[in-house]
Length: 323
Image (spheres, rainbow, N blue to C red):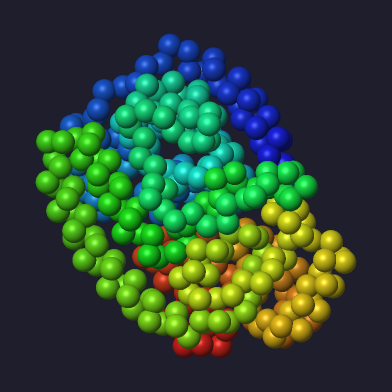
């Protein structure tokens, strides 16, 4: 597992390697009257496209299958950010491994690196974490506790109920940048929410079957998913965030799972399947493979499909009826 310091160093090396490529570049004019928007993850690409419709040209950075903490930066990402009128991102430092370095090299006055938050600074920044009820804020930032996010758990996109809030922030951001079409963005937002909100209500109804169900996850990133489903996540396969499990930890985890009747293992798709399969064999628990962003798994390219696929995986692994 790459440490936080190693990631920062990789950012620095990447910036130095790209400076020459970008010498003399300047932000290009808005094409064909459309807003040029870059969204960091597929969830946000999908929602932004729904709200921007034909008024915005939306491109993404992370593809979905990779670990968001280890997204490989590409020169093409810098080109996109250099031209962007807006950058839509999850925030809470979840994109710290790639977004700050890219913003610094892109040299776009509309969206600059915010060194304090590992996010974005400027009129074109749309931070989708605004207003979220942040969970798991660390009491200490000691490296002995693993790789912690200083602002709290940033994986709120695992809670489908955060979708409308993100959509409203995106609509407000686009309207701020393009006030001439503010009414269009508002209309597109209402149309999207009229589709999404009934789905969320149905997912919440189905998730009631999981309330109080005990589980372990591979990584400490499922707090918001637990909040939505009522699943009680009692431990992680990892020893600590970003620290691989030791044989001693796994043996203790087996005892804990048996002692507490834990019958569900949640494996985020980027993590080791073999360890979870071993745990399942020892405890009789079912394994639910979920994505941590849209397009991480087949047929999950939109926020709606991503949310529903995750819920279906949880229900099936827990022996409950899925959507």
